[in-house]
Length: 464
Image 1 (cartoon, rainbow, N blue to C red):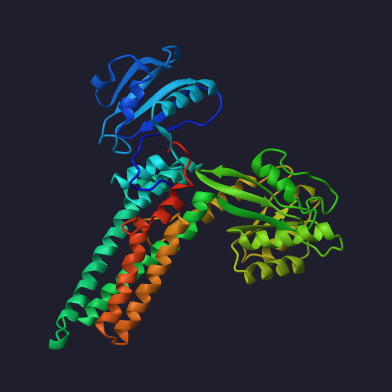
Image 2: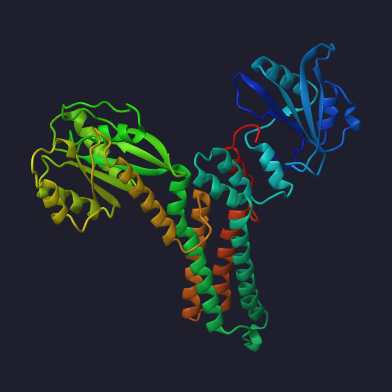
């Protein structure tokens, strides 16, 4: 990323590459209006007021018309970056976009780096680092749930919570450090019991925020759901039924799926990433064995496991063995009795299995005929809603960087608590409190380094 002191005027396309009806090019910096003036033919740019839209032409330096465009003007500080900014809407020809960009570069602008517009908005004080990162999350959101969380963070809800925690800790630290100034008089400015209670309250809030990351991460990236079971149980058929397309090869030959197949659907605003795995069994086939190992790994990584079994052939013993394995890994799972369409006569298999497995989450389906697949979808949705209901905070953390610093802050607070309980000197307790303040400040950007900013904004798309 460019040095913070390098405030030259930047330009970039704000719309994706490729042919389209309209393309937008953004320019930001103190020279934005002067640079655009060189290639603009229309109302005198010096007379254009902020937040107005104007029809005109972009011309090259030989006064040849490149395109008829709309120009939107935003004068500092009333713009996204809080700098003078212009957005030029051209026709969506890749040639036109490239031609206009070239002219702007020749006129004195430079190409923006990834995330540089948002970085400037952050550095100019439009919002803090959490809100800046939420901009990227909002752009990347692919479900209503992810969109809702990103909007919440962009509006500053999470930032406000962190700010309040820091204010409480600053008050806490100031009392301890005030005592250090009067250490010879052996003065105590704060009741240790009250300090301990305050510290525990802050710890609890930080812990709940940190714990929300498990839910927030699956909202952001989609809930990973592994479909596992023995070969030929109907896993690929189920995946196809869920996706409503022939995504996986279906065959009566056991062991057809030898690798992992992934795809996703959205159910009532929640994205689920379904993972069809190889049938789990002992095999001498080297390639299939690799697939089985990958299946077990995906099963351990999933938020929910769908254990599929053929009601016609599965024994109670093998199902119970599968349950033991799932519970050993502490996995959230649903038992799916498949191929009920193939049961004939007065079969008592379902009632027998219902009685044996009455204490376990069990659904009977026909993946082939899509019978009760909707019931499965409702149960998946219920599981996620259950996670949300169990949260003890109204703020949901979705960013791995935020989680990391919350974890460090929690550890520092725990050490401060230990110091108070052990009656350690105030200066040692204050060190841990200051450490917690530092880690919380890293989240919102009150404490930053150029390397940190470079790493964060480099992940943004160019033009944002």
